[in-house]
Length: 155
Ligand code: DAT
Ligand code: MG
Image (cartoon, rainbow, N blue to C red; front, side, top):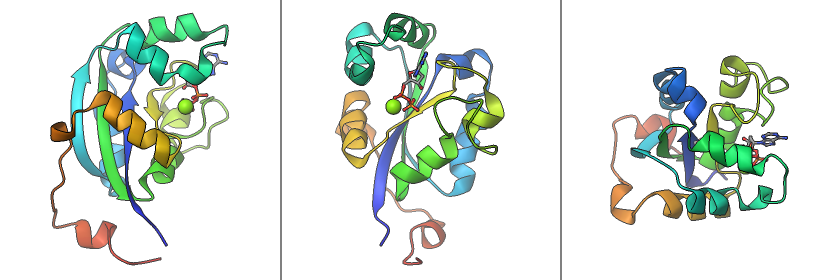
């Protein structure tokens, strides 16, 4: 049975620089994911060290942080059936050159860390990451006419 989940997406500085924000957002919207929150914000070292804590010992960690602070980023919360895995599938694997064609990373990028987007990788991570980037009152729950197509029983 599918679960209705929320997940976090960050549109990274390379997408901002390359003027591809709209192209990223449209992919999630046309899939049928519901936009529950969205804002532009500048990340700081404290937030990024928490966010990328699992990579702290990696040699590329300092340059990853520098990259993520080059411009503001756009943070979003998306909701849908199995949204965590669904969004990861649309985003594609970390290395854009081996990501499946049709994914955001494969179609629009070539390298790391400039792979366009971050997406939560588990339900637990999604809860923590949504709380990291949004206050509860910034995340909206509302009904849409299309809910019957995207949120129904189905398979
Ligand atoms: P993902 O973003 O697919 O969840 P991750 O959590 O392992 O991947 O890494 C976070 C980001 O760190 C990733 O999107 C790009 C950057 N990164 C990962 N591996 C890297 C590497 N070998 N060199 C440079 N940047 C890397
Ligand atoms: Mg990750």
